[in-house]
Length: 328
Image (cartoon, rainbow, N blue to C red; front, side, top):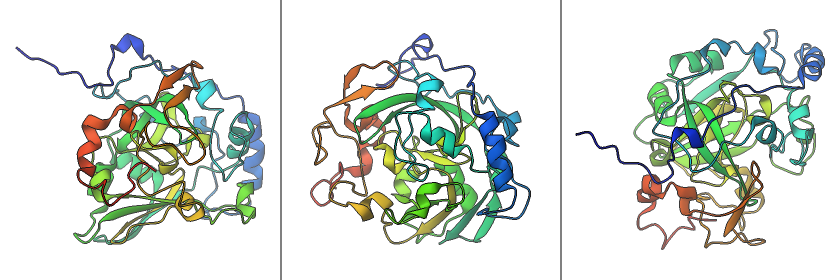
């Protein structure tokens, strides 16, 4: 007899039905902004750019991807119109509570887009995002997302495991960390014209974390290529960590021997550390982490250790709590 052991976050399929269609209300704005980008301002290459409309994404034919049923939820999926308009993406603005970030982010051209793979790898190279995506096997996963600001959502991400990308990149044995950085294009990201933050946005994880089953590179959401405000065309999803670790709109992935210093760790290391694992018993210096507000339902929920994924990731940190601040 085959006995399937349910993971601690799982519920039946009927409890977590994703949004079938994401209705963008910003196509006109994106098309107008594409005219600005057509001049080649701030682009990573010289080919004609694709405006920020996900319906024009060259990999649209790969969606929707098949859902991986090993990754389900204990709560309803957050509607796309809510999660798509509640975004921390500081390159485009700091007001996550309305349409500001989503509207401005749509100005960013999605193509051409290349990802530099360098550091301790067999062959450093720069690869087009479409070549990367088509070299992978896309799947959909339902993940909880917990922000350090004590709000949460549940999202149907599409993408591929980080470990698949590691195999693709072929790092050398001396690589201990994966360092990632986002784009710099002040022509479309107004906050990058200011000197408040040390752009580009940088984050890093250990090789062991990257090889964990949960670590996921995201290219789509709600069964379609991801709109820009989610971090298109390539972002990271680490559901057991606070959301600031999940770097967006990645243009460079480096395999390195030294621990990277993330943007928020550099700006305020007392509040935002390297590990950033979710723990309800370790408060942020300015607020409690004991509970979270679900932006989809408005409910206040108790925060779960490792955001409920402890069975899968706690072993990564065994014995480290005496020397490392694992939950800051």
